[in-house]
Structures are given as structure tokens and as C-alpha cells.
Image (cartoon, rainbow, N blue to C red; front, side, top):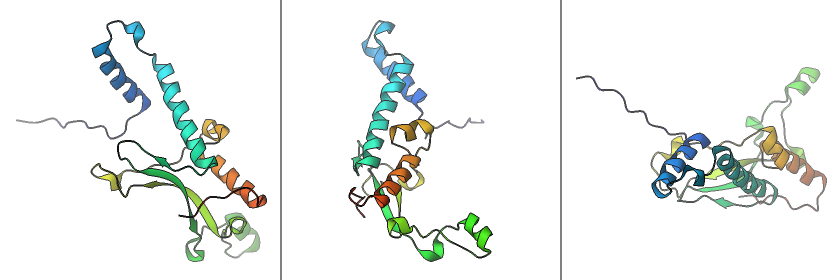
Length: 166
């Protein structure tokens, strides 16, 4: 007897979260008018996440995710010259290999890090968190571009507090 594979979702979008919310809310509310519309629901979640990421990027805030899902923080690492990225524009102009050394940050580069050392779900090494690089996130100060702008600003003005090195 042939069996059909069970479809498992490992990625939840805002649409999936809203459908779960709507199904759970219908158990307790009789009228549909008491359920929040989808656009409002998405706006609330996006606004909350933008505020949190804005705090993580701009104020060096460590965000402890609920339900033991880990910690998100901006982390710095010393640039290794052997593994540094190649600056192709200068390499083409000078006809020799030129690498990015991040001298404006004293040889450090910064990235968003998801600490999964104390998470409680299985198969956590297979999950990955990436920084959003959308124009909306950068406009609010919560994206990858906003982080790089803040790093350049702290390099130019020494009185602005920099990120702690973990």
C-alpha cells in the first residue's frame, strides 16, 4: 500500500502565524469581527521585531529569545589576513591582490550572532538566522546597512560607544 509523504513546515511566515492565530482565536470568540485583520496582525509583529532589532543594532542590546530559543547580539571578530575578503576594485587598479583589513574598526568586523548554546529544540545546528537587508529595515535602523552605517559612524567619532567584543 503506497503512502504519501507527510508535509512538514520548518519555516513559518507571517501568513502561517496568522492562520494559527485565527484558528486558535475562533475557539474562544464567536464573532469574526473580534479577530484582528491579517494586515493589522502583520503590522504589529513587524513593528515589534523592527523595534527589537533597532535596539540590538543601535544600543548594543542582547535579545534573549523566548522559549529558550537562544540569544541574538552583535558580535565582533578580528580580521584574519589570510581569510580576509578581496577588494576587487583596488586589485584591478593596482594589478595585485588587495584585501579588506577593516582599519577603520582596528581590524574587527561585526555581524549579528545567534547564540544557540542553550537552546532546547532538536536539530538546532541546521537552523540559521540572517540579517534582513530590506530598505524598510535599513530606514528604521534595524538592517544590515544600518549596522554598517553605525560602524562607520563610531569609527569616525571616537566618543560614540562601540560594540562590546564577545
